[in-house]
Structure formats: structure tokens, C-alpha cells
Image 1 (cartoon, rainbow, N blue to C red):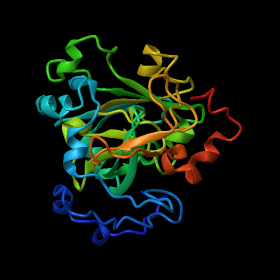
Image 2: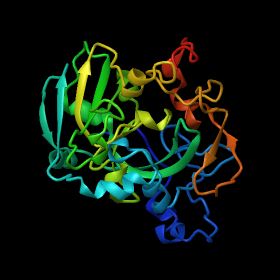
Image 3: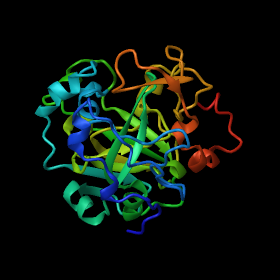
Length: 301
């Protein structure tokens, strides 16, 4: 597959993982100066992209299929069977069908992408993902000209996903993107973290990562991708339409009813860590702002 993004970093630039695991180490950001060409893990002028430790990334997350607490996914996700795994790709594609995960992986070019992750709950971290551009997978299936949106579904398997035994939300979890968002080079399907297989609690074996949007858009453990000409109704939009819209772009000037978005708390900095200003589009404004030219971003939130 042709790459549409280049990274100024090599593996030699990445701080060794064992240093991140020691909280008392001074974590130097070898990731500074990334992506000056524009697309990818680009640090802004005031910040170096220092990935969070494995512990932060895998022990603090939202995955309601395994429980609503931040530590529930890590505690409960071990029950999930991820091999074999199949992703159904259907709708407005030339080659619909059930694609085995192993066949997808054999066809894709895996890259490291060091991205900011911003939750609508106003916390953030930086994650060294491994994965491939979603555009490559969609192109493999053959996107038809009529397609305008991409709809995603998470696995439903309550015997292994304990949270699905309760009606916390309507299962399956559903998300969607506009086609141009899905085809953007920053949008990836992640299959690993720190060069290792992605843990179950982080969305194994395959999840979406859209770094300029709030984290709930990056749907986990995907089993179906549908190309459509209709805007999908995502799960949180269905449950709380006054709080969650379709786009979910990180925007410091548009608050969530329960959380200010003007600032954020970085995970790993301690309970009373200083909040820092939120970056427009989570720091990827240069790359993605053009997707929304002329749109009222307070109305299309």
C-alpha cells in the first residue's frame, strides 16, 4: 500500500519502554519535532509528544462492554477471545464480505503513529499506536462513488463482555465518520501499542483511531464496517443527543454540558496535576481544519 504520511522519527528515536515504566525517570521526548511535513504525530511548538507508560494506556480507559469504571476493562477483558476474528465490510463497496483479520494484516503496511488521545471527560494521554491507514482497508474493499459515510460496529458477545449483560447502552456500540474523515491519512486502524499486540481492554484485535476527535469516536473491537450514503446515528448521539453530536471534534471553545473543554488533565501527571489548555482539533488543526471549512463547529459538534 502507498504511504500518504511520513514520519521524521525512526525506532532509534523512541524512548525505551522500560524507562517509561519507571515513574521516577525523567521522560525525555525523543518524539519532539515529529511530522513537520504535516500528517501524523506532530508536536506543537510548546510540547513534545511523550507517550504515556504502558500502565497508563492499558489500565485507564473507557470500554463499557467490560464495565463503566476506568479499571474495569483491564480487569474483565481477559475473557475476550480475539482469534479467530472477522470484519464484515458491506454496503456501498465493490467487494463486500467477511474479511479475516489475519488476511487484513497480511495485506496492510503497519506503521507506528504517536498520537494525542483526548477524552470528552477532559483527560488526555499520548499513545504510540501501531496500525494502518483506514483508507487502505476501504480501498481494498472498493468504495463506490455513492458512499458518503462509514459506519462501524463493535462486537456483541455478552458471555465474554460482561458489561453487555446490562443495558448501560444499546448494544452493539456504533460509530461513524464522514467518508473524507475516514479516508484522511491521520485516520488509522490500530492493532498494536508500543509494538505489541493491542490489549483486549484497548480494543483488540482492531480498533479505530481518529486523533483529532474525542476518544469515544475511536470505536474498539470492530466487527463490521458499512459504507453508506446516510449519516450514521452513533451510540452516544442516540442516548444523549443534547450532549453528543456526530462530529465530536476536539474544540476548546465548545463545552460539553458536564465538562469544560477549554483545558485538560494529562494522565500520568498525578491527581492534582496542572490542567493545560486544550488544542483545537487536539493539536491537528493544520492537518484537518480544511475538512470543515464553512461549517459552524458549535452547531456541528
